[in-house]
Length: 437
View 1 (tube, helix red, strand yellow):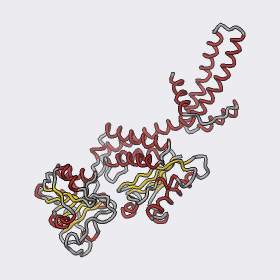
View 2 (cartoon, rainbow, N blue to C red; view 1 turned 135 degrees about the horizontal axis):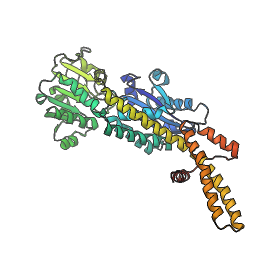
View 3 (cartoon, one colour; view 1 turned 45 degrees about the horizontal axis):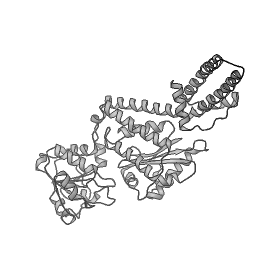
View 4 (cartoon, rainbow, N blue to C red; view 1 turned 90 degrees about the vertical axis):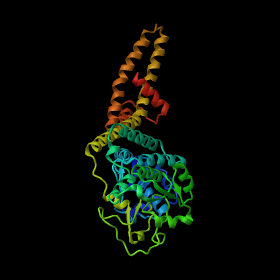
């Protein structure tokens, strides 16, 4: 059984998500080690969501409860966020709904800005990290691989990517009402990761040319050479920040990289300007989570701060047609995932039935040969058994698609005395090939 413990911008505050976004220790291995019935775990942790996907041994009584407990205890061990802290800020998704949820997440349908593209890569990286940590399972591998396939299908066949915009571009869109001429701005970019590269591209699209980069981790020079911009070392950072008209922070640092002291001013308390008011001398856009900018910056005279919370409040309305088309594709992909899973579940029973029938067939063929059969009886028997197996095999897949695989297994045991055990992957593949023929 699959389940997902999800805390996102829809259920939790950004303060709480900030505490979950960069755990000092990997969480998936803690979940996987919680109990023998936990088959695997993959954790997706981004700036606006934390989700633990857990594969449970379904026959275990109260498997769902054990899975949630495993996730909550691992979160507390890694981050210090207790179950009480999380109460009311997360939801549990289980069974068939897990696939539809992850597919929607990977497509950007559950993001702060609907259709943003960053989440697809984050979902792929989550699976890669789980593989490195040894916490995946066959079902989680299948789930995450199908999520990436669904995301690509949605990207290629709908306008969802154009309906939504990345957080970077939305933040700059909000800043645009305050900027008369992007070409005149002195911009300081703090950070050198993927968001920094996306931010730089978006700034250049708007005509910004005076761009300098600073990296708390010392990577500024390399980034600057790669992108043909200036950089500053730590000693010159404060001076560059005070000179800048626009500062954009987008690092994964767990501490504030910009505060009132760096800007050379004392905070007088929060004084954020509402959207549409005249531009202050300095605008700060904080795209980091954990937050890169100390709250005291908002109180520095002549400084306005836009953070993820503010950006989220001004996210554009969804373009309904593109979103509806994407939702339909997600539902279809989730249904196909479920059907494939149910067929895999019933495959051992189909293999057992066919083996039972063909064992009896070979016995009868041997008897016919012993009596001098010239091959006609053997041919007739093989044809007869093939036709006889067609209907129960078809019924197996029909029942599996309706979640009745267990009923099929019980019927085989009750009527024919066939004990069904797990079939190997080659067995299942061979069976599927036989049926296709």
